[in-house]
View 1 (cartoon, helix red, strand yellow):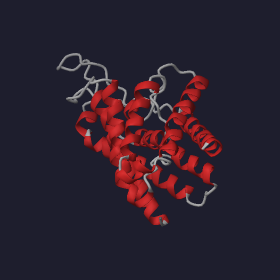
View 2 (spheres, one colour; view 1 turned 135 degrees about the horizontal axis):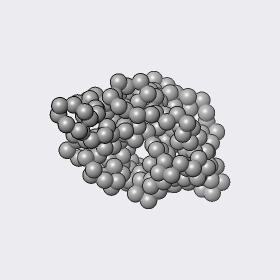
View 3 (cartoon, one colour; view 1 turned 30 degrees about the horizontal axis):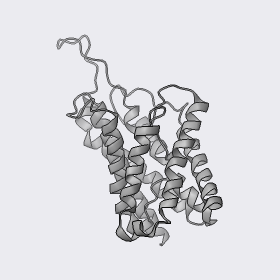
View 4 (cartoon, helix red, strand yellow; view 1 turned 120 degrees about the vertical axis):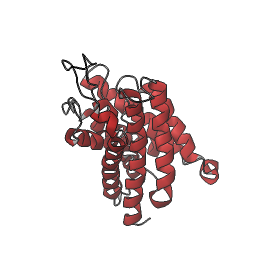
Amino acid sequence: MSNGDIFVGEIIGTAILILFGAGVCAAVTLRYSKARAAGWVVIAFGWGFGVLAGAYTAAPLSGGHLNPAVTLAIAVDTGEWGKVWVYVLGQFIGAMIGAVLCYLTYFAQFQANVRKTGTTEGTADEPVPTLGIFSTIPEIRHPVANLVTEIIATVGLVLPVLAFGLTEGLGESGTLVLIVSLLVVGIGLSLGGPTGYAINPTRDLGPRIVHTFLPIPNKGTSDWGYAWVPVVGPLIGGALAGLIYNVAF
């Protein structure tokens, strides 16, 4: 695969991933969405479908990593580091594009996130904080525990992804990406409760940057004090998964 193909593939695939993932969070979170309060199961499946669409789209061009933790694990296992920067740069740009596309899709709902208290229309509900649409927020803020959660969850993603590659039938049948997508759903349902399961550094950081600059009324904080956890945790988890795979398989 050429650097150009990898770069374009990762941009497109990661943009689709974030569009679907942030999109389902917006659908469940924003007040004037038809899917408001649909719940965590809907969010988990929305992210899984995002992986499905993004990875299948990117696979012919780049292999469909869509996640620096996956790229890092493969490099740790194989010792091939030359194209890591191309993958990660494409993933980062794609994540930011996907976040902007989500904002445009729900533009009217974001603009309606305005406090009307004290107007002639009467007292309205409080504005909805929007960071959780774009990035992760821990349910209990405990940096060490949150970091450990992200490390474990990322190993739970990346180690099976690497092992799936040993099953020739999955690749030949074209169902490998489908299985990975279901794995992401499972991680969301089983391990996503404490932190919102970033398990992908650019998935959290790129949209968090976009959230900082988007003109969303009453959007609330972008919580940069926590932002290192969903970056460092998945990177450690990816590296550990690569080491475990290299030793054990």
